Length: 468
Figure 1 (cartoon, rainbow, N blue to C red):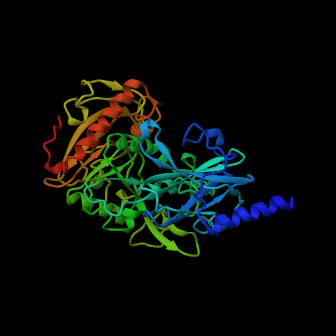
Figure 2 (cartoon, rainbow, N blue to C red):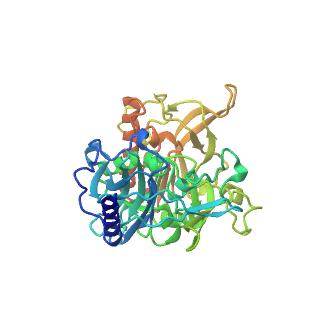
Figure 3 (spheres, rainbow, N blue to C red):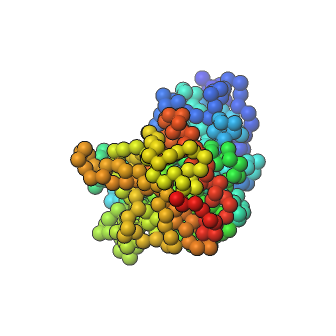
């Protein structure tokens, strides 16, 4: 027993003083199936978060984690196409003892909870390429969890950039028991302030990345578009991060934005950047980022109530309720949850349908919902808007509910950037996966590829695009 304790102490000491980057020992095997986590292996008792979660190569990233098994090691994966695997193993750490961390910081007024955990392992990133990464915690009891982080490029001029929605992941995070939606279904007990110093409960620890962005990341990389990555918080906190960017890509669910992020994207688009929104319900809630060295580091404030928000001049409520409809960014507005209907092609001559073989009335099943957007005649937007497709659906609980629509729109500012907004949240989560038929998958892949490759040609406001 004494010898075992001494060995644990020596391993922990070496891993705290040095970066544990050597190959793992033979008895700590990495599963042959690759980077993904089987649902049966994901457990809340094994979890972690990165500080910072967005950094430049060469900067040190601290991984704070908890696990109840005797030991663990990390496997670090860079995400992309990689021959269809979706990720590549680029680093393993040595085995070290688990530490069951439970200390928290709480504020019962705002239902704020932050994990006050010690850094378990420090990742030196100087030998890693810029990109999107998932660190997988591999506990010796078989439990696993992801820790997401981004390594940014120093220069993104003329690049295609993918925004990783950490704010939306945080809003839906139930790891601490408090999310922006309440506790046990009680909206009044929602967290008004949330900390990034906590593991994510969604996506096997990756947040919404796994379902709403990874399938798109894989396709963008397969098309050899050489994407760069930023966290959405980078766009919010750095007004120059989008300087000279060719295309900004948002995934399937990018709901929570600061006003600074919104304005920085609008400004970059007016200077020629194209914006691609491959989802629905984007930029719906206004957030505010703050920081406290003693209470959870970086935090997101989202009161969802003007009366409750102490900042009466800039409350964190829906943009629409502040006279700033999301259509100014997306060229359409949120419609409904769980529509009834399928995707139907209404405008086969639009450039997005080139090479699909689709005809007017063609139906592609399994990709409509769970939330959709649509254009309205009363929408406010910059430049011109074109409806590239309209699928008829019914919104509501009952068969007799009124007919509505889900639309794909193109917005262009003459001689400046353009925006394509898909208006369908399942477009990536289901449409780019084997969760749909081969026919639907091929269709969604082709349409998405058409949009990506067209946007890479230059500002859409300068292109002669076929809209119907």
